[in-house]
Image 1 (tube, rainbow, N blue to C red):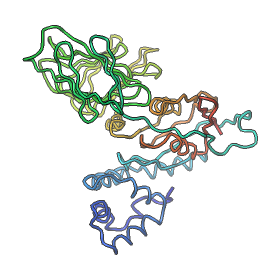
Image 2: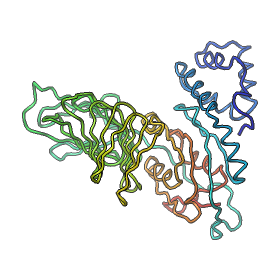
Image 3: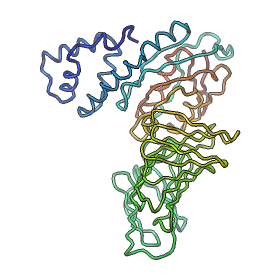
Image 4: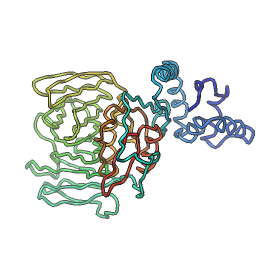
Length: 398
């Protein structure tokens, strides 16, 4: 980790050099300057490697500078002084360079002597665990189940109400042409197993991204005064605006009503709470007799076990980062992080050992990385190790 603020280490023309570098327009002399800067610190090299496409480079740099102006680096230094056991690591993805500092804030120390005896200072994973990929299962109204994505070659289907279903670039498209539909209400569903994700476009043009271990049930053609769907797990929605026909999402007893909005809804059964995060537009969240109207940048959290509902301001874009190939965590417990990793990597992770409950992290991780790479990054905080025991990966406090 660099011991100085980023601004103190940048050449004056770094913006121009990076834009030209990504655009393939950099001269040999300019490349030498950029290489010298990148070689001066591992942080610089990681930033260079992880900046996105040329069109986004300036935006990402500006975002990084905005975070500096907010005093992120000063805050980190202060925490370091106050807590001698805080660890810092950089986790970068193309999604958001500015928010890639991983800050491990540890409130307690624990050593499991039964595992740590003899010293365990690295991960013991003998199996390479690859990331998930795009695949899902389409359940037709007649009960038949069809695999889509990956190696599946069938690209066109027809529902019994004559709705055409097409697989286009790993997106399921429901083409409900009213001129060829009968009047019966027909339901389909799409489910994504562990180790997968997928996207679909409903008959009204609304697009839905499904995360691992998630599903959606919906009519092939909407009718009546509302457009109603039901989900399990996590989904990100970009809803087509239709003021006369509100879009209603139900998940674990929670009801979200929208008119034309993009938002993320996470309602896994094994998570402690249901999170509804608004990116654009407005939504009305209803649960347990309580209601809250969200504006962009707000998140409603509902805890089913207590009936408590709370509202907080968040970086909303980070909660849909998974649809763009990144995990983004802000002050997340190691248990919550491991549940997300277990779904995507299709592994059983046990993070229940005493001494882990106070570990919290913030950072960005690429979903295309192997689990082994992510385990190494987390273990680099010197607070834990990952150990393979049969079919289970144990998280061991150090």
